[in-house]
Image (cartoon, rainbow over all chains, first blue to last red; front, side, top):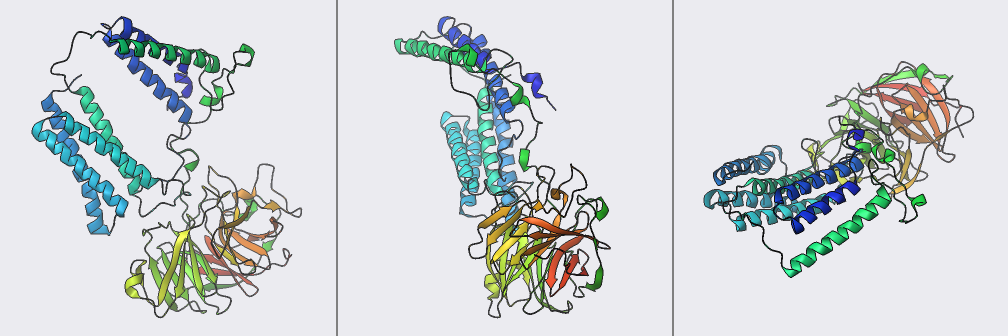
Length: 65
Length: 495
């Protein structure tokens, strides 16, 4: 079981900084496409982790399936 | 890692095979062999899966052309919408109250949702991994509009970063479940992370409730170890047994005060009307528990005049009535087997508030108030005893309460609670709800007006009590093995 405390070192603020950095690269350093795309991927992963932290006590909606 | 077009085709072939053999093929198999019939919405969703498989065949034959992949995405999106729309009818009901039969723990509308979602994931993954034949290697210059878009993007995201810093803070702080309003005053900033990481990881949270077996309640049976202290013993006065052969273990018993007949349910979804000697079967039906409001095992029975009411553990109920003119062909849709001369009037569900996410193992009917009464059973997630009353006329919730304890009764310790009792049978007389608990073999008397447990007695020499019925001054405790232990109705709890 993954303890939430192990992944709490990520947060929304950092995500926005990474997105800003990716946008800056696309705008001013378009040849760094790989780095910008990598930042996009990392941002997505952080976003997903944050979402899972917020829903980890009931990963499936509280309804009948 | 990238895939060549040939490899994508090979993967897609397997996707088509899995889709056709899995949900589409299994649906036909279930229909032919087990009588599973889809509703109109189920048909539309199954057709969508077939069309997606057809698109896959187009790709295998002609390659991953954009219009094929676009069609697959559109179908996946439309199928997901259909599944959400369909599931929306049932997702919010109480625990165990689905529609038709579940497979591998989920109903077909939920499976359709998952299948279409997986289709979209698969298409996305294949497109992501498909090797580009003629990719541009040089970046294109930005147009004027493109430059405006990039500048606006940077400005807006920078503003978001500022707001995120103010409202959630730097590492290790994260967003809050219940944020406060924005302020530029640093003294009012709330930076935290403890609340969001509290609590254990769980797949279904408060919906993690094990399904009870009405014919076999596990746990401590010795009343001396129960939550109530120093209870008097109620002495057995007689023993009876159901001599008619039932098709399973008994799960509840009721007595018709007008005729003395018995109503019995079993863990095989059968309902019996027995004569007053318990030897002859007057009527018997084997309910189809899958169509279309699904029934978990039957656990409650009550006479309401000439109407027979049976209740499943998921609070779904069925109303039956002996009727010499019952049409066998019409009743075929309700019963898997029947002795005839009996009709199903209605099948629906009780909806509770305080007892939500709890199962029930008993049903009583009070003639004076014209109400059905259920008592919820505890689970590791929900430790409470809830008495719910439903108006007989519309079968809607009339009132609910958590019974308190009368001053004459005391708990065995500060950590003990009435919620430890598992009520498996209930009956009403003179404003008192008598409830038998399989846990700690105890009889409770609950004053319905004062919403209070006013009496409790230890029951000796009973095993797996599943039902409670009143016959004159006698209380009949029915056991899962069709034995009945008779007690004289106690006087101490009379109002």
